[in-house]
Amino acid sequence: MLRDIEVAFVGSGVMAEAMIGGLLNQKLIEPGQIVASGPRAERGQYLQERYCVRVATDNREAVTNAGIVVLSVKPQVLRGVMHEIRGHIRSRVLVLSIVAGARIQTISNGLAHAGVVRAMPNTPAQIGEGITVWTATDEVSPEQREQARTILGALGQEIYVEDEDDLDKATALSGTGPAYVFLFMEAMIDAGVHLGFSRRVAQQLVIQTMRGSVEFAQRSTKHPAELRNQVTSPGGTSAEALYQMEKGGLRTVVSRSIWAAYQRSVALGQGKKHGGPGETGGQ
Ligand SMILES: NC(=O)c1ccc[n+]([C@@H]2O[C@H](COP(=O)([O-])OP(=O)(O)OC[C@H]3O[C@@H](n4cnc5c(N)ncnc54)[C@H](OP(=O)(O)O)[C@@H]3O)[C@@H](O)[C@H]2O)c1
Image 1 (cartoon, rainbow, N blue to C red):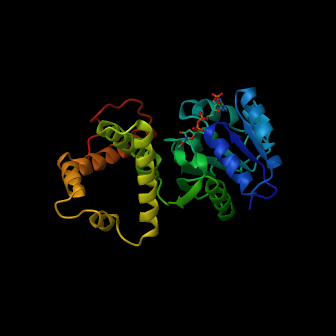
Image 2: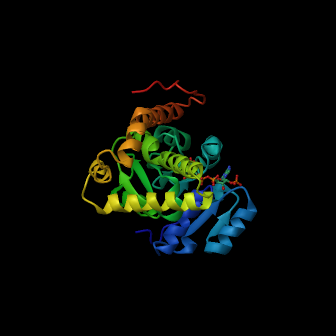
Image 3: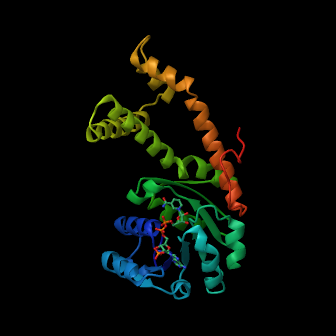
């Protein structure tokens, strides 16, 4: 799928490394087909030594012969980077952006380039356990869509969507999702410490409970509500805890938070920098 094609990563940070590592581990590409660019020579040297890929500190040099250009810089530098490489990407090349909040129109205009894939990965991608939602412009050919699928598959699961608005929704649900999970994890660990467990034991109890529950839910054919009912005996401990969570509005808070994240994602895509608590309204 990626045979004989050069893939340039513009921005060689955490996510670019996750993609490079995944593609090479799965033998989907040869190291010589990859070029990674970024401002720091030491970072390039590290990637070169670890993965035997080619590196550059000049973004233009990196993209000139590429068949696929992956934009993996932070949103703050995107405008400058696009200005730099505009006119240096060949017309039939696939541009794949993972830059959070950057709309296809922005990338397309910024690069004067029509074939663009926009993707939203999440942090577990760093261990190949992410989920990425992506979409493509009409100008991206079926073959290029498969190439995009292969590259994003190196980060874990991937889901194609027709509508770019679904990327803002996915940003709120799966892109930001790890933050919610980590917060819940942290709250449970703190509760365990409050009960008197050492932090180490509380952490072990919580992480394995979460991991086991996720795998159980994944393997089971039952809806999560049914699995929850199974551990909720009348007048028991789960019923007591769940009553308190519902009373505290946990479900409503989760729903409102994710809706607010969606609206924030839409606003960021429109270039609105500032937002405050409650500004996004809600469901
Ligand atoms: N991390 C995630 O889980 C995640 C999830 C969803 C989306 N994303 C998106 O993925 C993108 C990359 O995120 P990341 O976590 O990989 O960030 P990162 O580790 O900071 O990587 C960005 C890289 O870009 C380099 N860079 C800075 N200025 C540059 C320039 N002018 N030209 C080329 N490279 C430049 C940085 O180099 P220096 O370090 O030397 O500055 C850094 O190596 C972001 O847009 C983010 O929104 C990330």
